[in-house]
Image (tube, rainbow, N blue to C red; front, top):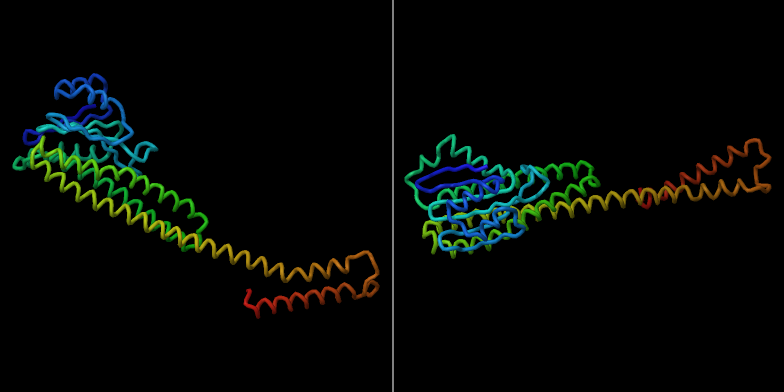
Length: 302
């Protein structure tokens, strides 16, 4: 599917899982290099940037979690940035691009901003993508707060997996966005020669957004790691208390086991022919148990 939006003589063409015929038409219309045409036909695992005579070819991956339509934690967008056009090629539904497309249609943002110049569509598109990542991070922060509440409500064991899953998600976010820094810096350094000074200024603004996003990701990873240490400490304390209680119970019952075993021997024992022998032995065992319990309390084992 292809959608087109035009703003101040700049055209944004958004290609969502384009068919070979649709891609061929775009390649011919914008005179795209055959190698680039081949690349945009299928997803690419690595980010990359290429500078051509009249345009820049850019592959970037963006992390997703809550708003993904698949089980993947990242989505790819291929950009072809020309002097008066922007092509975005994607292989999955991306909410940020869909939202921006609807805004441009309904509110006619492009036609209302005819006084602007430069690659404004690329700038607002990238900010929309980073804003979407911020929403994902806000959801993870809420998840982290829920984990914190559960930890201090006595669910330390259940939260071991939850914390690990949250950290894994954030590490994937960091891994995916780490490649953006190098790509954007290359885009800033080389893009100005092809697309002009205004484009360089747009990349400067995007880099600021990137650094702010990276700081949030790193801060959330640090918080969750500290939370994991806290959870491990609480879990260890709970386990130690359980072991301590079982040890004290063994300390109290061991003499009772010895006494009962002694009087259960198939030999003549004291009180064996006494009418009240059972109650005498039982009383003695209770007395020993109370003595052992008192010792445990004095030693502060309980």
